[in-house]
Length: 263
Ligand SMILES: [Zn+2]
Image (cartoon, rainbow, N blue to C red; front, side):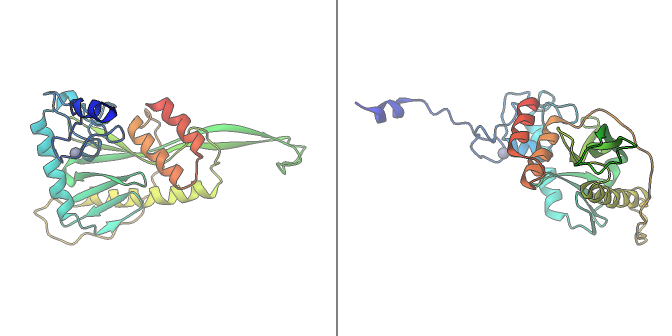
């Protein structure tokens, strides 16, 4: 008999997510939890499970714990109604929830006001020297111009959750920096990050729940604190690269190269 018989005799090796029931494919593959149960990539993303340092390591999580976390996210999703929004950060003052968005195929992470401690503005640049020539419009007398190319603009979010004490909201990140700090892109991302910081400032000023006084409108704080800390997690970086690819900021080639490096 032909191919069909052979196929039918093969045992069904399909695996299914223990939480949502979706079939686990290569693109949706997720982690194996400590008790050997498996959840899909989507469910893992929703509760920040993964192997990088800013995620919850799957070996520390049982299916019961993962299920409880997923139910909590389901509940947050149900009630979340933003009172104030910025490109990557939204705040629901009534329910005291913050929602952080990652990438353009948006994955969200929720934090309650109580779990949010502080944020740090992270900006990494690399120095680039442009030599005077016919193309660069640089005065041959001065001969060269020093430019700063953007590598990474992010907010590091600090929490009081022991399993994920911090994570990164990446506003811009480039493996092959080419946009300068004088570019439109830089201005745009700095504007986005200022809006996000203003929202987080208003959360930090927010009174505990017992106080029902209305929230004061936030003012933009121009914090000049800039700290360089360790790089954002690979998964988060990859998501943001995907978003940059979708937005046409980086090429497929650059994305593939970065993906190879990160995975
Ligand atoms: Zn699932």
